[in-house]
Length: 189
Image (cartoon, rainbow, N blue to C red; front, side, top):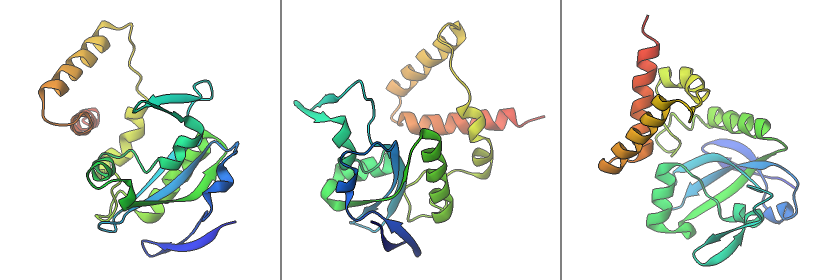
């Protein structure tokens, strides 16, 4: 069922025949996408079925069933999306390297492979690069939830969106800067 291939110098098992997932009840999968134009890589995770209540979504005037959308998914990182847009999906190859039964298991597997490949540390990977402070404290920020009943949170989101609209930077870039500033401030005694 699984074959072995070398990914960034590591022997990794993968699923050569993705058709086995056609009628899967698994939650999701971890994958590695290769940019065939330069050999760079991206490791990520995705769900097989995004939302069981929403069986299809409209995209480019045709219906794409969500339970088959996973077949055409190569990654959501900013750089990989820009490269796919520039070169087209035919210049990328994705392999499924692991599967999970739950969201928690999927998250843990993705982190396992990011650490194994050192994907957020090496230049030949498109995964987001984070400094040591951000790595240590990223989970702190991810646990924060905006409260739409708090006027200060509503005002912050409004101002953030306005700033993004006026800026030439992407929301992702602005959020990375804000995250760094936030973490710098919470770590001061």
